[in-house]
Length: 372
Image (cartoon, rainbow, N blue to C red; front, side, top):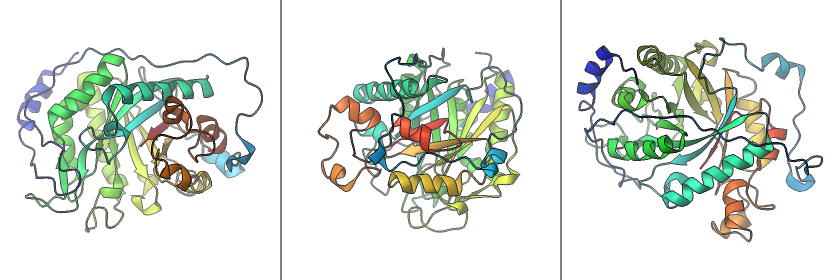
C-alpha cells in the first residue's frame, strides 16, 4: 500500500500521544490504547450480491405490519437525491448498501458486535447481508463491523474528558476480521468532553487502511457541557467538515479509495447547520437515523430528521432488542423461530423491521443499515 513517507513520519509520535482514562461505567472492560501500530493490510473488497428470486410474487410486506408505503411528495423529489460531486473510482456509495453490526467486543451491553461469540456474530452478519441482497438485487451489499472506539463515560475520569479510548489491540483484532473477509470497518467516536480533532489523531494508523471508515456520534458529544447519557449532545457542521477534511487528506496522501463518514442522528439538535456541510468526492457523508421504537415511530422520525435536511446519503438503524414488541423482548434473544432467521431479518410480528419493510417504507432508501 503506497503510504506517503512524510505521513508515516507523522504517525509514529501520534501513537503514544493519546490521553487515557479508566472506565467508570458498565464498559470498564474496554481496554486503554496500546502503542503497537497495526501492520499494513492486504485487502480486497468482497461484496455480496444476489439474483432476483423468480418465485417472489407481489408485495412482501405484511398488511398487518404497520408499515406505510412511502408516498413521495414533490418536496421530497426536489430534495433527494442530493446533487453532489462526481463519484470517484473505488467509492462505496451509492453502488453498495452497507449492512453493519455495531458495538464493542469488550462489552455485552453496547450492541451485537460484543453480545455473542465472534464466529456466531460474523455468520449472522453475513446472513443479514444476504437477506438484504435478496431484498434489493439492484445493489451489491457490503458487510461492515462498526466498532465504538471512543466510548463516552458517566464520570470524568483522570483526564476529565468523560470518554475512554479502546485499545489498539482490540481495534486491530476487529480490523483483521473485516480484512480477511473483504468487508469494511467503521471506527465510531463518542467524544464526551473531548473534541473531534483530539479523538481522530490517535486513529490515524487505522484510518490509513483502505477498508476503515469513520462515524461520529453527536449524542455523546457534550460540546455544550453536561454528562454523557444525561442529556443529548450535539455536533455542528464545522465538526463534520473537520472530520471530512481529515479523511480527504488521508485519501490524497495515501492514494486511498474514498472514505465514508457517518453521522448519527435522532434529534434535530444533534446536528446543527446541516446546510453548511461541505461535500467532497473523497469523502461520502451519510446521516443515519439512530432512534428506536415501533416501525411507525421510526418512520416518523426518519421523515422529521432525515428527509427535510438532506446532506448527501441516508442511513437507518435497527435495534435487535429495543425495536421488538414488549412480548418479544420478554422472550430474550431466542424467539419461537429459527435462530438464524431471527438474527438476520426478525421473526413474524416481533416488531423488527424486515429489509422489505425498510425498502418500501422509507425515502430516501437507506444505503447504510446498522444493527445493534
